[in-house]
Image: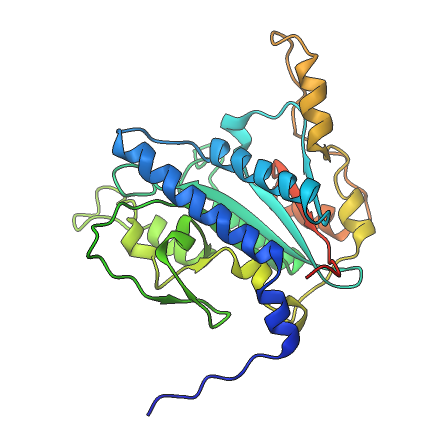
Length: 298
């Protein structure tokens, strides 16, 4: 006998139909198509390029629809060193925010994730997932790998997925998928039968069974979830290097390209700020910060 699905409350239905939920859906679909087009002509895209496109979509939405997004970045960062990792804060009730730490990775044209172990070396014997686990333990935030995906399919291919919001979704919603840290750690350390080398996981190793569409971050009732919540003042001052991304773009346009840019190391944290303390302990130094505020325009 099939288990009867629990009906959604009016508040849940309103949130599911919110514009910001639709925004995340459209972004995932666009990423899916863009990666497919690149792979079709033998090109591999970078996480940074995809992330910038996503930020443009978010800023455009905030400018022309609902002004409940704030987007920040650090000036003069080195993309090769710091990548495009994101602190995402979502307001669930008045002045109460959930913190999601997102580590971006992209599917390559060989259908594998080739960069999961990047950053590990003899001088830095710590994987990215080790930092994310420590960050979760120290802060109570939720860490995910944000995977950018695209997979060409034949016309007769059938996909059926249901997310944690109990909503069906098409496969293009996995253009931006979120995956828990333990899953990536397990797959990132997988080796071949002879134990002579690592075997990078494929798209199918993770999707859809160990993933969720990233829309679930904003489409579900987060105020029902348990966990540590943060106030706006903590989010605003935990790292003084974050500036509105529009200000950074304008200032860098006026700089000589030959000038060495400021490093993101040794950020100016506030001593009693919980976010700053946890980030420093875990050596978590993301490039971008996105704050999603509540709106009465759902």
